[in-house]
Length: 111
Image (cartoon, rainbow, N blue to C red; front, top):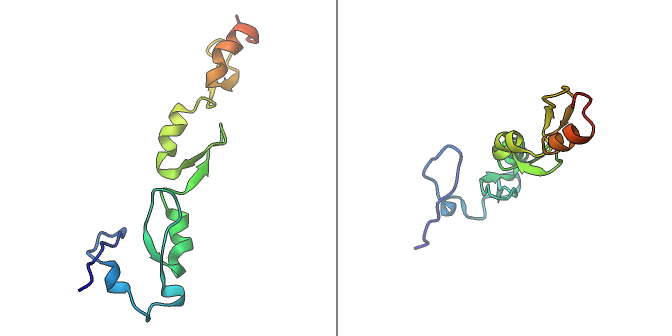
């Protein structure tokens, strides 16, 4: 008897790979794994684009540092991104957070 491996699904049903194995699964119904690092979700080929558009592991480019960050981590990254634009407390000019002190010492019009 073939050992069953758990099938990771978003709805948490008790399904197994071996329940889907066999020559009858072909074409758009063939199962494939999400290619985003950390995901591993198994979906039908026909649904892969839909899953990819909603996958919380899909990379998204940070608007400030241009680094690719998984969607599930983007909120935290944006709070801590060193290139996040903040207002200078002295003059109100928008500068990257990591450069505020340099701005205040060299460029700020109010210091």
